[in-house]
Length: 187
Image 1 (cartoon, rainbow, N blue to C red):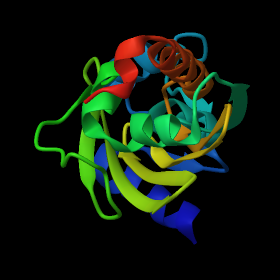
Image 2: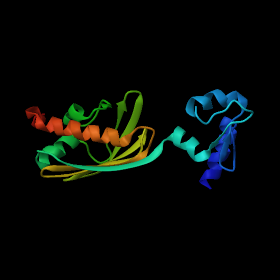
Image 3: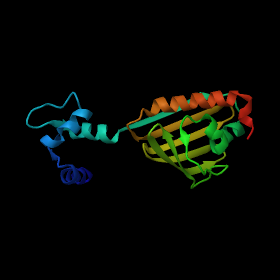
Image 4: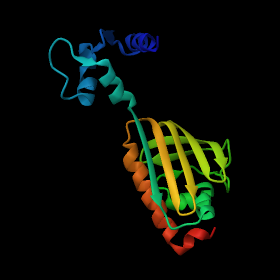
């Protein structure tokens, strides 16, 4: 049902015919297709690509990653570094939107940018050892953090064109470095 709806939308909006899971692009739209699929596009009368490849390239791929590291920090320091907006801004590699409350709470919504790509975060769950963000725009999924005395775990699942595991690893390393410095405990 969903595939049929997507195919109808492609036909109406982009004038693309989806037959037997192939996407056929009219002559006037081939230049756009060549930019996205240089190895599959051909200068012949029609250009066909698998529908799944089309959506992987246009919408992103499903990715999931769970990383857990040992970290020399107390449970409270880990909690503060994830929930206190002042500290979050210091170690998180992305630029965060203005107007964040001092401490993130369920329902708080903010945007982060990694270059031109915006990701909207909505705090879905907060407790003494966990926070979960629902993600949309540049990443459609969720990011969940769990922590305890001397360890932290990051679980990320979503659909995106971005390499999520690489960004997740970089964020964990930045957090570890931030907590190793003396200024991380002060507001």
